[in-house]
Image (cartoon, rainbow, N blue to C red; front, top):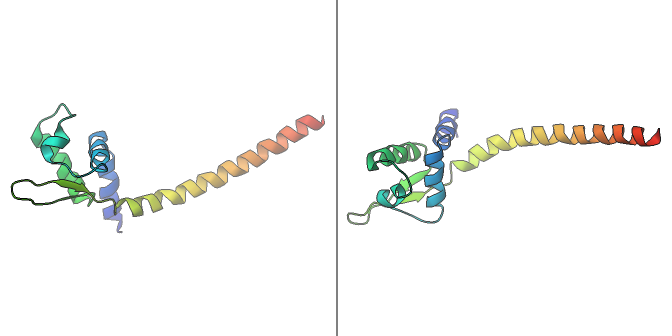
Length: 112
């Protein structure tokens, strides 16, 4: 995944409406109207969110006659998760060192 693809993924995930749409699509495909139901916004506004998700590769749209269901495509989340995991490992190491330091301090206080 290129930096631009990673940027598109994170930009798409930055909006709470788009994250809610992805959460809904994790339960199965849905039409634009179905996706718009829980939101107080117009269908064109929902369509704009869907275009952002589609450009990021996070959703695909099918074609069944007049019905164009949206589906989650979680593949771009893998590289994003990998990118975040490097920083999680960094912070886990820092927290492990902090825990060890605090235990040393605690043992010194107990010995006094």
